[in-house]
Image 1: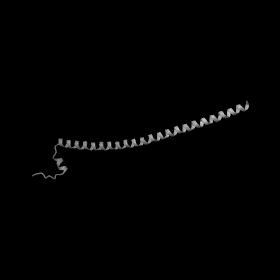
Image 2: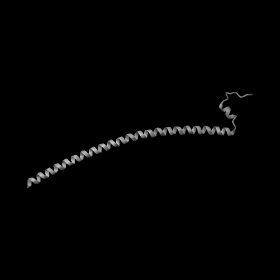
Image 3: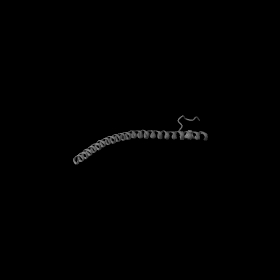
Image 4: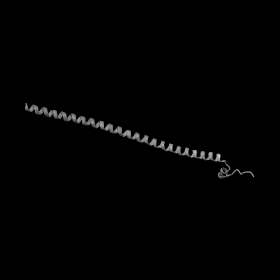
Length: 99
């Protein structure tokens, strides 16, 4: 009696030799593992891209903070010079009034 072309997978497995079954199982296992590895790689790529985006934002914030600190330093240096000039002016006035 000829086998029908619409045999189920279980019927096909039943007709496989143990070597063929082992090879089929190994092929399925490798395929599943490759799928999992691919999904893992895709997830890692997403995380790397997210980290890159965050690091760009952090670098921008650092640069802004640096610029702000430099401007603040410049303003403080100007104020220091003004106070020193004022102090020297007062010292000159006091020393001239005694003399």
